[in-house]
Image (cartoon, rainbow, N blue to C red):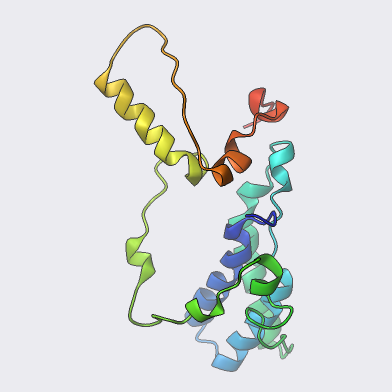
Length: 175
């Protein structure tokens, strides 16, 4: 986030390559080349925050489509870059100020993070969900027909992304 990239699209393509490669029963070398090609496709600028553009909505689908493109190219024999995640110009070094490649495979095959995930309960940025939960609890606990003002504190990163009072956030012109 600090460098202006949306994690869903940057990391999503690699998850999609792994999943689609597995479903296609692609060989390890094909998946490795597909990862190498995916490194050139990983993107996802958060510039959409400036005007409420629809880019963010497209990021998961673009990541999935690009993953299939990378697999198709690799299966056709196109050679992908080596070390696309941890290499000198790899995604971790390009998209992070403090890359931790040692964490990538630390508990691989032992810890299943997917079991710790959940469904997104609100159609808003995940960084707002704590505040939404708190507001709903307050509404239940203190029901009133009169409007009530509340103040919400957000983390500095959440504020940068969802709280900064830009004109497009104060007066949105689209969904």
